[in-house]
Image (cartoon, rainbow, N blue to C red; front, side, top):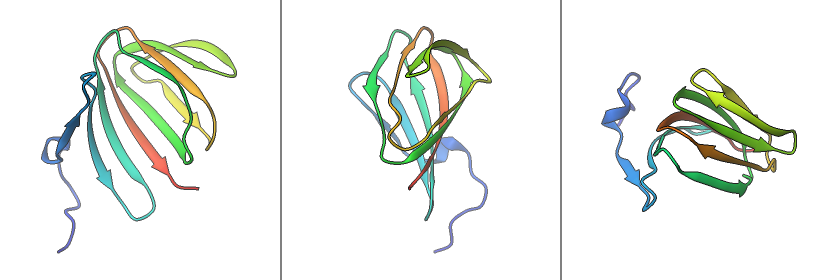
Length: 104
């Protein structure tokens, strides 16, 4: 079966964590895109990934923390985390992100 070239996020199944965080994933052979909806007041504790990650903030706001310090973010912000880079975040408002995950 051939994958569709154009589809809306809503056609992808959503998983929802007990925290209320929702994720919809589009998996490719060498990368994935993940749309993440995060409720206001959510905190993501310090963590890292074994893969490189790019993040685009579509809507919402909060604070990102890395070894470079703390910085406020809002819609239009971009994050880049090389593999193994720790980061943490606090989400002040409901936030929608799109992650691009690339294996090392």
